[in-house]
Image (cartoon, rainbow, N blue to C red; front, side, top):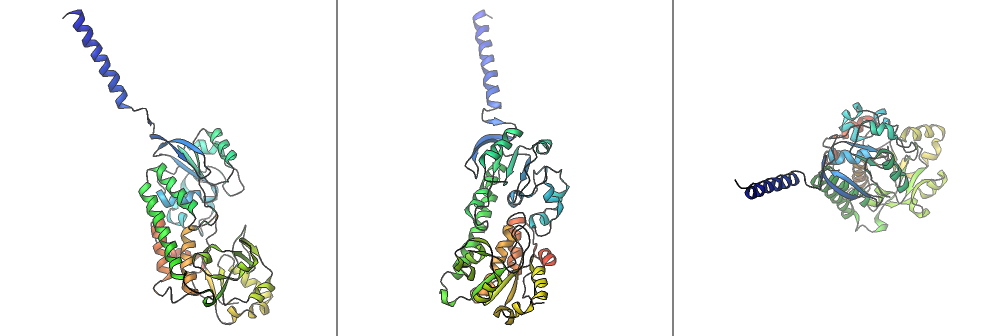
Length: 367
């Protein structure tokens, strides 16, 4: 064989090896999946490999949103807050194995993340819902060297576009885009259903309503309520508190409730024991309320624990609608609807457990 032919064969062989090496590991690939850049709910650009294989979710509500999309799959650690008590948190009731995972920090709205414990479980991505401070999220990413993706519940939590976008973002990162879209479609269908049943009722045909004993940084009595209450807004209810012009948590004077004297009162079951205790001290106040005298006092399942348990809030909205507008919700069985919602979000019917823990959907009596 001539030197010239040998040289050409050698050059061809080397070229084949180079091309083969390039094709076996494209530049867009990294360990764990394809490298991509996503925009999180703080507007930050975050580069990471997808689908992620090892995940942690920190801060109020982050793990809940993750469980809606991907269950317990690929979660490698949880906050102590998630281990302490699962009562009232359906995502933990549906996934009890989460409490067996390593602790990655204390959790809670006022405790900063623990970079050292986060690194100990070697996550590929950290989903966070701790705060809306970009600098703090950037700092956590810098300290850990792990991509940190911010999620959000928005202002309303239930049916809020920020929740929809958070679910889609989790789906994109976990390779569960179809599942995330199914969740968004289900939630949006429920929102439209609730609004559609009630949107054409004239304001003067709606009974005046009130919700009390709502949780807000702890449990409270009947004076704890909300203006522009999201569940009343979802069913176009006539909330007496709206005349204050306030939005969100409000502590009212009890005399104001007597002045409003709503036809129907709902009590959040987390605060119901406080209402019962207050009744013992001041029964005359409660007996003066028309809703109490006429037996129009009803329960609401508590849903505000480590921020909004969205499935429970959705179930409550249907129950509130059934009580306020029985004609428009005559086809709805609230207990079955609750299980339909829990099944869609978490894969399990959980109403019975919630009712066992808190009392379920029912009329309330005082004392």
